[in-house]
Structure formats: C-alpha cells, structure tokens
Image 1 (cartoon, one colour):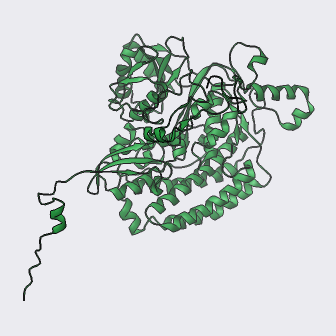
Image 2 (cartoon, chains in turn blue, purple):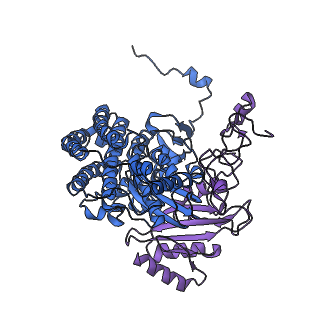
Length: 410
Length: 209
C-alpha cells in the first residue's frame, strides 16, 4: 500500500514561507575574540549562503598610541615599545628601530654589532615563522604542527634569555649598539640549536607540505595576484608568495646583509599554499644565514665607541671616570643627541617591511615617529581578496597572511 | 640611489614647482597640493615607483604654516630606489585637506584612514574615510600636538552602555610620565625629564575636573 508523504509543512506555513524563498544576505561578525583571528581582529562579513560578498576588517582593538608615546620620550626609552609591535619577533623590531635612528644620526655601528644584530634578527625570524606555521596548522586542524614548533621556539627562547635577559620582551638594541655583548660559548649553543633544528624543521614541514587535507584547504585558496599585492603594499612572505622577489635584505642591504649568501623564495600562484612554502623556505635560509654569521663572526667593539653623545659608556667606566659619568648622565636624562632631519628606514621583518619614519628637530626626543607596520598593510587587502571566497576559507586565508595585531594596531 | 636621483631631476624639469626637500636618506621633494596626484602618477607610471610604502602626516604644532604636511614614501621594486614626496595640507586647522591617492594605489585606503583618524586630515576623493584605529564617534585626533599624552576623558564607545553605566574613558593618571626630557631653547633645569604638569598626579586630582 503506497503512502503519500506529501504532507503540507505546517511549520513553513505558519512562518509564511509559502511564497518563493527570497535569498537574503546574512551579516556575520567574526571576532574580535575568535581563535582564527590570532588576536583581536574583527571581520564584519556579508554572506550569501557560505560565500562572502563583502568583508570589512575592523582593527584598532590593540591600539596603544605608540607613535604618540614615542614623541614624548627619548630614543632609548622607546626600545621596549618596539618589542610590543610584532611581539613574536622583538629582536628584529629592536634592530629595525635602532638602525632607523642611527641612519638619522649618520652613525655606523661596528661590524661585530652588525653581526650580532643580523644573528638575532634571523633567530627572531625563525621564531616568528614557527609560530605562524603552528597557528596556520591549527587553523586547518593540524594540532601537532603547533606542538612541534613551540618545542623549537622554546630552544630559541632559552638562547634569547641567555643573551638579553628576557625570553619575550628582549629590548636588546640601544641606539649605537646593543645592550650587552654575547655571552661566552653562546655562539656554540646557537650552532647546536641549528644542528638539531634543521632535521626537526623538515619533519615539521613534512606534516603539512604533502598533506592532502592541508593541500585541499590551501592550494588555489586566497589567491593574491602580483598586481594586487603590489597595489595594496603587501610586503614580506605575502608579497613573495605572489611572485615578486622583493626582499629588503637583498635589494637594499642593511647591517651587513650583503656579505652573506641566501636565496629569496618566491611563489608562483599567490595562494595560501605558496605563502606557506615561502615561510618554510625562509626558515631554511635563516639557518643558512646564521651559520654564515657565526662562521665569520667579527671581533672588536660591539657598540659605537666614538658616538659619545649617543651610546652610554659601559658601567665599569661610569663608576670610575668622571667624564664617562657625565656622559652617561646626559644620555640618560636628555636622551641620545640626534641631529635635526628626517629619515625613513625599512627592515625586512618576518611579517614584511617594518618602516620607521622619524622627524627630528634635534635633541633626544623625536618630533614625529611613524611606524609603518607590515601587518597593517597586509590586512588591508582583505576586503579585496575575501570577496567570493567560502566562509571556511577565510580562516585559512587569515592563517596564511600571518599577521600580528600588536603590530597592526600599534 | 641614482635611479631615484634621476627621477627627481626629470620630475623637476616636468613640474617646475617641485622643490628639493631636506632629507637624511632617500631623495625627497616638496610638491604643491594641486600637483600631488600628477607627480605621484608620473613617478608610478614613468619611473616605476610601484610600491606605496607609507602615507603619513606631520603636525608642526599650532601656529606653524603649513601646520600639517602629508608625506608619501614610494619604492620601486625594479630599480630598488626610494623617494619621499611631501605636500602641505590646505584648509584651516580644523579640517586640513589633501587629495586622496586611493585611485593610484588602493593600498593607500587604510593609510589615509589612519592619517585622518590621527590628525583629522580630510583626503578628498577617498571612497570610505572612516576612523580605523580609534572607534567611530571618537571626538579627537590624538596625534595632534595639542592632544595631551595622558588622553582626554570621553564617553565609552558604546553609547547605550555609557548611558547605563555612567562610566567613562579616563585619562592616564600621570600627564606625560615622569621621564620626559624637553626639546628646544631652555636651560637644563627646565629641560630635565619629569612630569611637566605636576598640578595633578595619582595623589591629587586634576584641577577643575
């Protein structure tokens, strides 16, 4: 006996849905506290089914007014604030800031100081990319990648702590040098880290590179064309993933990068997978750089000795010599004496080109300091690149852009 | 650096009103506001300055003329040259204006929103000039020199919650902090770093608050 199941849907009838279903767009707010936004980023999205028709990123939740603060303190006092920009790579920020002020002062630091800075910046790059990689893995559901990368970061933190006294907020550079020379035997421990890191990195990357699930989520997703990437001012691995071989370490070498050999990885399609591959290769290149720096580590001064109005003398001298005591007092109270003028310096940070534009009227305090943060620029492309992607792909897209909100909001 | 120096020389031949600007690194030019877009377009199309690194502004403090200068940093990914372009903002202090460069580089969108947010500079022709770092409806432009470092008391971002709770965004207790050295013509005692406005701190209320 056949049964007729064509009952009228009473619920639908009650809701007045008998007329043809009119497709309506849904608005959805993701964040500011959402696991995949890696910080306090909010995306105000307009969805047609599962496809985005509009995306408006809302930033500024972590705005601390760093630029205003910089105008009200001496150059050295601002170094700790640079730690809190891209807090995954504070050593690289310290270096970019110090070089910017030194360019303004027309000061050249000794080779040993440059080598220390390059070494720490590359270690910071590894540390930042490891975190980006782990978080990216987490976004696509690969838990173990994060555990592997955090394990390696712990080794790096131990080295940072030994060098700077802090694991996270290092505040290592000073204008005209660094806060202290490297400890005895530290270089050997850096090389020991590299030796165990290289196979560990390959193992970690092998969890993702040929992983079918990972590829399904990233290959062909979030494609950023070369033209778009340049027009929106993307830098770092995000621009290189789109096929532009732009790396300030190569193109406008600073701090002695021109002495070292390294390759700049470039993507071909500009999708999330290319950006991932670029970061992986950059870590290998960073290890290569670290080995070269250690191999020809220069001896000599680790701060600019002649810059008597900029770099405070060592403590033992302050306590024994009148002139050094006065010099230290002047630098601490009035700040390093920087001539009037303006300078814009960009360094290749893990996230992209971190720029400092400093306008000085002379004296120890900048008149204006603008921080050009790569994460801010990298996020500005979201309204363009998100349109037409699936809701769930936005999560992997954010992971592949690898931003830090502390730097974006400043 | 020669690529940017060449570009500047050619640029000055084409636009006679463009003048050199003092700079301690890359070549820099001052451009009249009316010619800004034409100059930037020439730099982008004819001299391959394809990457707009940064857009920002400088506040030269009340009474200065011009009070606000907008600054653009361009970079060429082909010749690795950099150039800085500066232009004075027109209009009065309350609403200085400068043309928007979003038609040339879409990436300028957020930079200009930030500059508007921090300085109150209106970018004419910007498609969506809203605040970006501070919240919508915030009444001040914090990077202006007259804005105190400690901040100014304002209502909470959410007006409903502000009404309900009567809570406010309050300034930081110390005006300027204790470690600020002053710049300019003054003797050492005046310039010595300490909180310059000591009429109020953690112990004593701000007068008239």
